[in-house]
Length: 381
Ligand code: NZQ
Ligand code: ZN
Image (cartoon, rainbow, N blue to C red; front, side):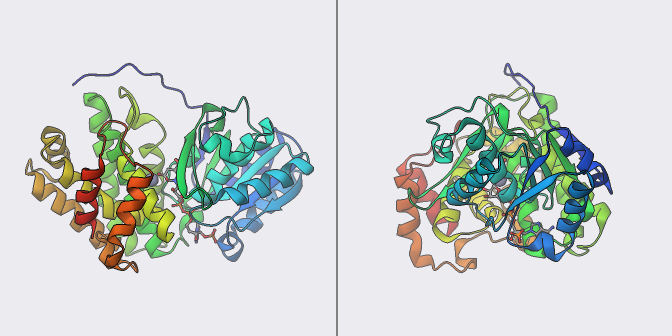
């Protein structure tokens, strides 16, 4: 019931809808002439989004340098190289064209250049940025919410970590969300995106505080995604369905679902990051495995909250039924709900547990100990 004290702040200007990138060039020009264009492994070239964006930048008279090949589950090394390139060329503004991996990398490139500090020092919270090179995003995959939040997640294979950093200077200045840029996202990543946005709503729901209206909004976002998501998977080119999921994903993690809360829990994400780190598993796929296990662990600890979730989503206060229905929903999307369904051999149980214990992964509100992590891994297999 309690509404926790909170500050609402979100400076990102969101441009949503078909054709919005037609004003990209003039928007970017407001921030300077020298652009660093960042993108991933090639999908944007293959499907023509790169051409559209480049045409905008060239027509606006901007000079463009590029850093590409950002990998899914992005690594700090790419961010270092891109920041070095940006510095040498004295860039004024970064344009990130892609999904969460590209946009997260761009955010950290922006603060690394502006503060002349190694990116990993931010990711490990040893430094706070004073400022950032402005970041403008063109989103091609609906999932993370990074287009309208101040967070970024990176991996460092050398230190064996996948971690997040959040700072208000990292909000994108402008984000362009044209749902037609997402019609080419393959079926599996479309499903992972739906899982991810639902998981963001859940992380907020299980955070501190119970603001009544925000609980209702949060569950409405999940219900909307549960309504349109399965239809979209049978009709991947449908721009209307893409638009619904795109807006759901932005709303799930742009701050709204944390109004009146102390913040989210994020324990499930932390556990999922260890699976991405070990096996390069796509982010959303880790979450459909971890969430049912986490809910089963929490069933006796926070029954009222899980009952509220069940009533809101499935019209039942029955906890086990709720978890089962959720698991069935993820499975029907084609996202794995057990590790055994992935390429990872179930004999890796010890390795997974050791990794999770090594990094002592836990939630911000619902803390986890070694015994909890053991139970979680058992139930994920
Ligand atoms: O590399 P390319 O060729 O671009 O291909 C990508 C990649 O293979 C492809 N793709 C993207 N848009 C496409 C497309 N393929 C066809 N058509 C398009 N329009 O999709 C693959 C996955 O891309 P990626 O950017 O990795 O996916 P996503 O957007 O799910 O981002 C995942 C990353 O975001 C982090 C995750 O941990 C993960 O590292 N997250 C960031 C958050 C944040 N900043 O707030 C919160 C999230 O919880 C999450 O942790
Ligand atoms: Zn996520």
